[in-house]
Length: 182
Image 1: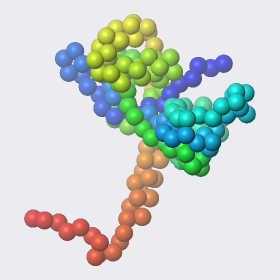
Image 2: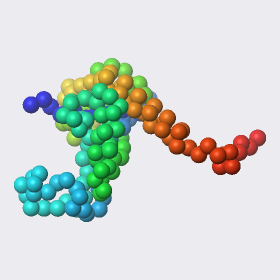
Image 3: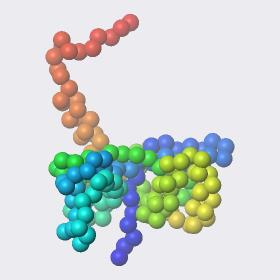
């Protein structure tokens, strides 16, 4: 079985003094309230339970493809998640050492992070005090974060579509338009 990877979008690359890190954003699904609508139960796990809370990182489209190749796959996954009344999609970020990227990261690029690396970085980035201490072993592990050109294109087109939809939905009434101050 192929190792799972998480798509992350580059937000900001820092290369200042000893701080040589890139902040990346990822999408996750969450529910913060108990609900029988969360699709984890005895049918999916074989365990008679109902979850109280739920959180999970998104790692591929819902159509069994390994990569997000089109904006429709991204939008479709979000719609599938949000069809469950108690679930929603959100984003968060982690920091990744610059040396782990297979090419110089630029804002908006999509990279694939091996789940093992993501799982190591996730708790470190929740507590800034532990970040430096935990990074020494990670940098020496030789794990590479790989650029995904097809996903970079898909997410850029998806983002453009979101902005276009927001502009189209914005009220066109001149009475509602904010005035500029000089």
